[in-house]
Image (cartoon, rainbow, N blue to C red; front, side):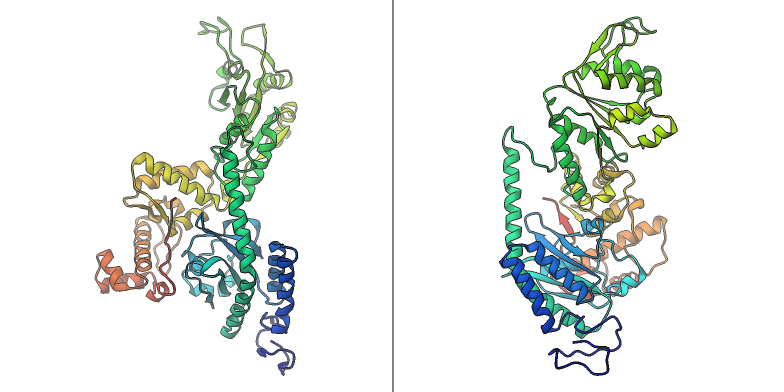
Length: 550
């Protein structure tokens, strides 16, 4: 037990750890008192055994870590062995976005090293540990770097099912050891329930894939064809798509440029009642206003100079199917008035004609503009806005989609590597970190262009950080006064090559120098330049420095 009084209460606490210097620590707040941990184990055991509720058991554990162990942030990570990923299943002290970003691969960061080595790890001071990635982005303040970090594996025999990790504001080594001991005991209790949960999840995923493979089968609310991503924001979008696709309701797709609204429009069409009909795509910002009306509604022969014959417009071409109006916020007020009639009556006249044409179509519109603000400003018709805004779907920007960034990067890498005949099979850890921390103003379209460029530039089997544009280059090294330009680019390449060689050879500087074609003395000077310590690479089995593409 830990007390602030002058006398430790050895009678009540058999562990009897006394520390007066830490005002944040109250009696048994270190979470190591056997008298206080027994109720936790009892509550967790009851949740698992009697109620078969792993979620309740984990919530109980996180609550205990917060109140009795004074932990500021805690993560329960699970290892998806089939996908090769480690993800945060439950957390305390993290936002939803931070939790979504917490995806690791075996050997990557402290969490990945614990899963790969099946051994606990203790980091007394985060700022002293170069392997700590802060992938979640939750430790942003200078004071956060003075925290301690502990991580223990969840083991079932020799199989690592996940890990339990915690961040707390103290560095006392005895207390850290006690934390590890307590979490190890808890991990033993959780192991069987976690294994059953992972098996059930895998079975459900296989059943989902079998169901999707059945001809004519109804797709569950997962990613529709052509759409990639499994983050929580995208699952919510898929759920809405599944419900609205089966109707003929007008849909308005909202979101920033490049988020993939056209892909979702395809999913709405092919998942709905008009799937057998045509899908006509039209960008309302692609043509000048003088010919826009003719393109949409068609024209009669002689209706204007150059109209040598009658021509169908896009609405007629879409009869019996779907028309996708992209950038609908760019339409002029005159064209908006005619579009309103189509929405209301599904009829119109061609330019220069007087015959009413009726069509049976579904309308899907998209824009990156705030239509409500445009209505208030008088640049967009209010009645048209209400007609379009029947079923709005907000498509999240890429920066809010967490691990989808990695999934999309892998997809584009495999695609463009195949197109260019390059044997690229992995994305290195520094490159993944850059992709995950960049804010992606151009969203998925920008990511695709970045990966396409990187595939062209790479000369081996991996995409490296130095293959990415300078706008993505992050300060992955410290201790130098290099800020930007050519020197920064060369330094980033040199740093990454040094780190990968040291990781590959587990800190053996002689072997690393031989691989890089350097003398041992030159290798030492380069390591000193970037403050690299060979001992940091001997702490565990050689980590997987990159994500292999399946």
